[in-house]
Image 1 (tube, rainbow over the protein chains, first blue to last red):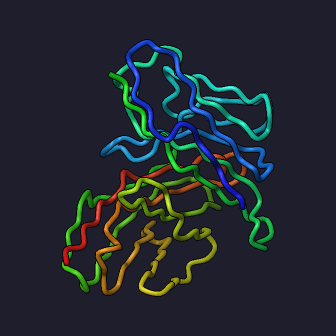
Image 2: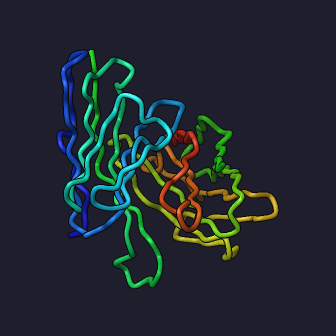
Length: 118
Length: 116
């Protein structure tokens, strides 16, 4: 089954304690990205990666790092989390549709990671 | 720059009523894609529809229908005979073409509450 997985799904941590949220996709997609969702703000892109070792900033990259050493994995790293990073995080990957629609790119979202920083 | 506006922050309807969620977008791309996602209380994002800028035909899927009008840059979503299970936050989103296709720009969402 084509899917994007994220771990952990829920995390409560304290200010300054480094954490990593993992993201993995099994569709051999080149493009992956991270979004955060905050009440009243919708989803905003944090970072994206167009391929292995190619990453770039999205709209709200401050306080985050990413790496793309393998095609399937795109971890989100918070070196020193702060309370304003309390949010719902979504990983996504994008690639050609697997449903017979030629030339159509589909975006697949992970189930989300709810992070609370106290 | 791309922008998606969902002017309705929250809507409440009584079950079986019809409801329309508005979405207005801005883009300079001539080719672009519009999306609707549903986010139920459980939190996951559920893909509902994708429409490309060259296809202005309205689409109907069961109780859901979408009205795409390039002239007004709108992509509205109507739920007919709403049900309690429709209660969710609905997001409209936009992506461009080429390099712009790599980012989805989301609206802020409309929270729909269907009251039994």
